[in-house]
Length: 374
Image 1 (tube, rainbow, N blue to C red):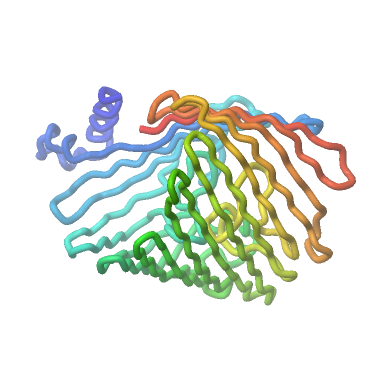
Image 2: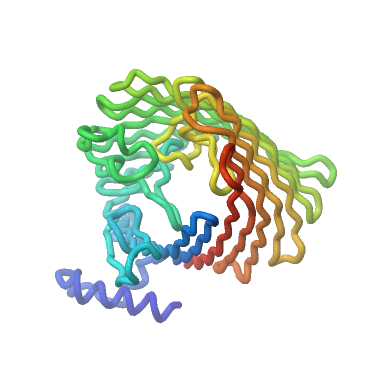
């Protein structure tokens, strides 16, 4: 892997950074850090006959310019337009394209503070800035984070985003593709408690806020973590007020683990984030999520056992109870997952189960996922 990294850096230096030829290449390589993921996923859903081969390669390159400034770039490799760079079986087996998703400068010259300017991932509870297989929300602007002991504060402003092509509420940004987006937030960590609160606004499109708390501890041999969160998003054009609350607990003892969580949305709507899988939403398992479902409730439950240090088996259940205003029907899924972590940077899981939808035939579903991190 080291040879591959050095080759990539050398190629970039020759092709894109000839103006820096006066700098010693060896010193330049020492100041460059490369990380990322390579993911392959195969889905097979029956009886619809829907099968997909999905690929995504994401590479982040950080270069230390001087003691105070770092340049960051991120490339997504796949097929289709960014950020959904997948090559699926519904298309011909074409060659993959390269997309530049991030290009920014990070200033760290102030104590306990970082300031980022340029095109970069939007880090917030309402977005997913990076994902090994799914959408990534990015924008061009300025963001900053500073810490005062246990308290951290964040603020960001973007004059452009990709929200009209990324995430689960793209239609809200139709006609507002150039909407400004701003967010502020605070994190507080005290003993075993973590508390956060965030506000976000997209001009003429939406206002959103979320508040969350989690607590982790151990009693004898039991380790547990509980969480609760409330999120709200108001759509300015349609005057729809979405809200979602959720709470849950994860327990571990020796090689055994269990998880249960429950949440509800209001009658207006349940779209409380740019991405339905973001922290403000409720998407814990596979094909079912509470996010984006109005007047509904959701139960997630699973148990798992660590068979060996590398192999974990889990049984997972999800149940969506749809209300009259939801526009959907009750759904549930039950599946078995075998996760094998061959090494710290190579993980594979296999899933097989059944999806039930009211007034429809039960559907079987399978998935193979392989992910390499570097």
